[in-house]
Length: 203
Ligand code: TZP
Ligand code: MG
Image 1: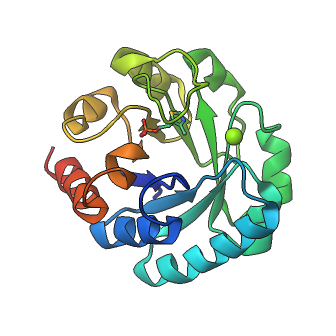
Image 2 (image 1 turned 120 degrees about the horizontal axis):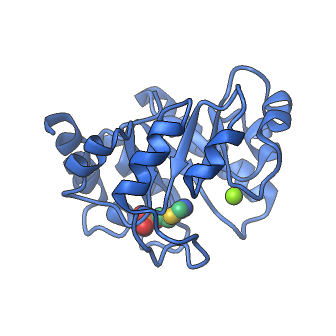
């Protein structure tokens, strides 16, 4: 599975993207998403290939954000798309059957449009977050629970989340927690990842 702890890289964080991914893997993350809104496709492909080589031996999945062609060219484990990134059914066809496909869901009403072939959803933001300045209104834990109830596939919660949130996320029915800053901006990203994994396990 894609959860329970899904770490998303940030090119502007103190550590390099490679070191962020390595720390997440050492800390026990189950998936790492390569997210970079401004890199060229060629640079994304090169980075995705390098990340795959580092993550695969540890059994950590690499998911590429937004860019289908990059995910295919790099042979990534999966692709994550937002509401504005195209029709998930069509993208599933182009992605082929073997890679993971995740879709961002910002409100419960969007669950009706999740087609077969989507493996998981990223639901949020649960709280407001500076990491995505253009984010949709926060859904809170009640909004998250409503999305979980309506989603045909597992829900990974995202947005302003970190240590201490596992109990509320589990109560809402989430299958995992996705974080950027709680790991990549932590003083020790590996320890921060491990703490999230332990908290999820023991909650
Ligand atoms: N999508 C919804 S919120 C978000 C994304 C990519 C950013 C989450 O970042 P953080 O730092 O974990 O709040
Ligand atoms: Mg997107």
